[in-house]
View 1: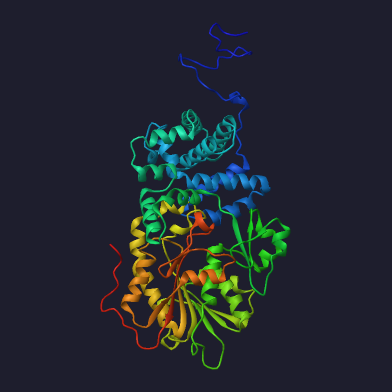
View 2: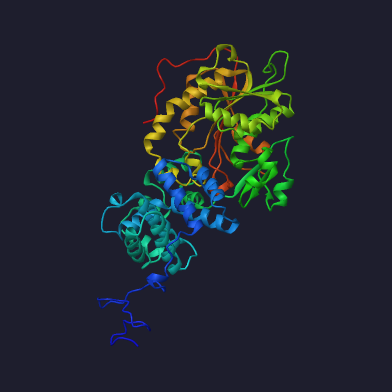
Length: 510
């Protein structure tokens, strides 16, 4: 039996009270709606809470939560897509949600805001039926936050679902300039869009590539693997569905999953490492050194000045062992130094040692003794935004300026440590010119004991195909061109003679 206006269902219950406008509802009655959290969505929520509450890194939290909740491969994939997508798109989704909430977002319970971000991503960017996204997100709210906020989450997400993502973006960018529109549509802070535009030009790329670069930052990255040379092989990886990499020897690409189940990963003979990192490490290891750069009466001595957490150190250590060289891996933080030791354990013990200390305070007796030095310096990480989805919302322009003096000091320390005729590699996971070209030019201007080598040629020499990454002596890899993180490499050769040191502390760029 129905009511006169058709508002009652077959059981005679009134489902739509008041209001003339048609409204949409869940296909389930309140008593039928789930009040337990779907495990995959719960994992994604726990990742977002760890990131926003504890300043954690999603790529470290997610695998542990997947194992804790014992997700199968399908659910793990869903949780990964949901968590990473919500984190990458945070600024974009917050702009949409702000149009759907009757109060400023910073006045919402942070846990509720994280739930709303997850719900918005499902509704607007994933192939999840709207009723399932709404029902499961409200159930998640009830399970992890409480019954009270469930109505708010339901109402806000219903408003968000009234338009497609494209329609929301058209509205949000209606009065924006090109940079602001790109920032909203591609979910990057405005300052990062400007910085990446500047970076493209500084490294010889057309500014028209900015759209492709931002899109590459938002694409789910393929897991890159490396088999430690002379120690590991790719057999298990290929058996598990990985494909051999086409950029560098000993690499493979994997769709992901729980790699911790692989015996080769557990033993450390295969490691997860971006191909860009593999390329710059191999380039430093292969660059020609002058006669006389060898340590007296022994093989080459190599130095990884900023070794934590150990990915490059493990690859360099394996290469060093093959060539009868010895690697010293330096890391200032003890807990990260322990990670370096763990990474190096598969490498023969005689080929490496770990030092815990500031790379700028190497003992004077070590100065001028290393054949090869790599300084992968602390940086803004703007080149790895696709792998660290939360970092774009954490970084500020001030971070770049604050790191500049440290980067210059570490490059100075690396040059001081190199033997005459030896090679120094300066590496950042950022294309920002203040962290790359400016540091290199400053060192060349201040010091007379180094000459610049062609880093683009050095990368091509170790790559399986030409990369075209070189520009005016330095080299810059790009996600949208090479499928790697945006790694920067500059190479120097140490000259004989004293260094010309600055008479005042290095200043960071304005």
